[in-house]
Structure formats: structure tokens, C-alpha cells
Amino acid sequence: MITVTLFNRNGRITGVRAVGHSDLAESGNDILCAAVSTLVQTAYLAISDIAGEVKYTRDKKSAKFEFEVPDGEHNHDADVILRAMRIGLQDLSSGYPQNLKLEET
Image: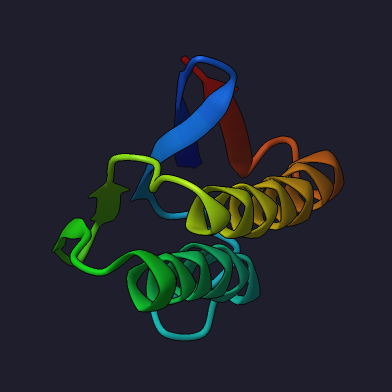
């Protein structure tokens, strides 16, 4: 099972951790793992592009990025990107409840 944790502070997502494997197919051929990875990686790249340096770690089983929500105009952009990521993850989780767990702290 993939577990995606969204870290929240003051009503905003400030970090994401994705751990595990969906076990729908072998590693490298799993559409759910690919979809989750794409959503998380795209959010990371977009936040990095607008906000600058973002702390990011990745290994074969997990990806994690955390950041301080940027001020001003970038704050709004980061919120939009992360809310879009959440919507995509919620949709995947509802379609694959035995394989993807989405939690928020």
C-alpha cells in the first residue's frame, strides 16, 4: 500500500511524504505508483520553480518534500498547486482504496 501524508500548518499544506508500493503490478509497471509519483513530483517541481529551494529526499520506496509556505504572491501559487495535487490524490485514493491511503496531519 502507498501511504501519502500531507502535512498541514495553519490550514495550508506545507509538506508531503509518499511511502510504499501499491502492489498492483511489478515495480516499474505499476500505473498507480506512476500516477502518485507524477502528482507528487510535479507539485515538488512547480513549488521549487516558484518558491526557490525546497528540501527534498527520495529513495526507492519513498519521496518526501517539505517547505515553508512562501510569502505574498507565491503563497497563493503554492496553495493552488498543492490543492490540485490533493484533489488528484483523493481521486486516486477513492478509486484504489486498498492500495492508496491519503492522510493529513
